[in-house]
Length: 157
Length: 245
Image (cartoon, rainbow over all chains, first blue to last red; front, side):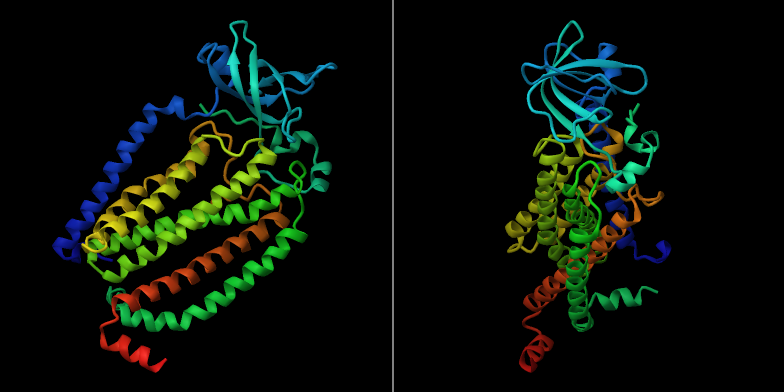
């Protein structure tokens, strides 16, 4: 298609459509940039430690359940564990309730609850995050754990 | 150079060509989706974490790809209508809307059913889920707008503009999982990289996606042919076609 050979009124309309698309696109982009913090579903451990997350308000915290950090109560359903961004920041979480099937050490989770001033996160809901690296169980057994991408917690800047 | 393009814009010619395509595409889509469903449900491996729940992917991912491709297709048809004033392009866009709405609905439902056992929640207001809901609402808005303006004859223009403005939502859906913290995992298929899963999982998924494309176009052809017959019912060629068949 030759742009130059288009009839003038059609070329005008094409330009108008491109302009509408650019205008709509940039205005939405500005709105999304302004709302960036609200669109993120959860706070990372690093954001919580640096004081970016509000205390005593219902928020979500997300991270990897740190290996060896899960302590289950012998009396009730209380579970304590640390979530980490695998870059050195971690936040302690206390949760009383039923955990999703995918909850395990090394799994990404997102929990809803309140951050106390002591720095402990009291969760009322724990959701398991999984990644797109699906694989059959036989393959997962063969692959050493460190080779699985599963252990990676992507933190966007 | 654009001769074929203008010729295909003739409803009569499009109707004649699509007569030849309609049945093969429909038969092929039934065959591919039907055959591949057995593969996906019985032979593809379960996931090491999710078990058999991962099989919902074989419906969820193709439906998501088609809901979005369908939207892009609809917006392109609308742009062609707005620029070149080819009526057939408007009918083409109109024929996509209910189909796209159904596919978006299927994505949300299957995602919900998948989310409950794996994440632990039917729904979360994360960026990916919310933008997909917006896609469904855009399709529904398109159907409503058409219904409201059809009698006045200004529906094509209004829907065309809505479709083009709504196009902004497509990259938001696509990149939501990269731009923000979401519960939803990143894309299963990427254009530039190897799929994140082994061959025995992504191959049936890819074939399912192809099957869904065939299904999409087979239903779309039925819809647009129907639309052509309704709009052109007073013309001589439709009358002679109706008389001969």
